[in-house]
Image (cartoon, rainbow, N blue to C red; front, side, top):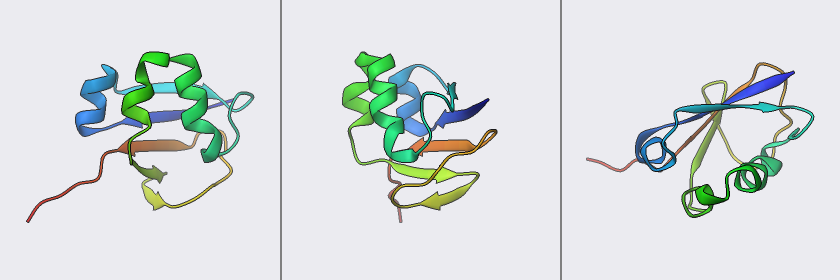
Length: 82
């Protein structure tokens, strides 16, 4: 009973991983995700506490959301360009 968290762009490089599996028993909402990841990987704190964009199942989301088995959560830095 897990969901996948994927990291993109500079964040993936900083964390030195592309994705992790998280048990729904540990995290059930988006609001719980970053604190949980920081608790599991304290050296990720600086990178994860930045302003990051979140997507669930390839849809950008704002605010809290209840996660489901098999969901794919993506975290990535804001993109700028012209």
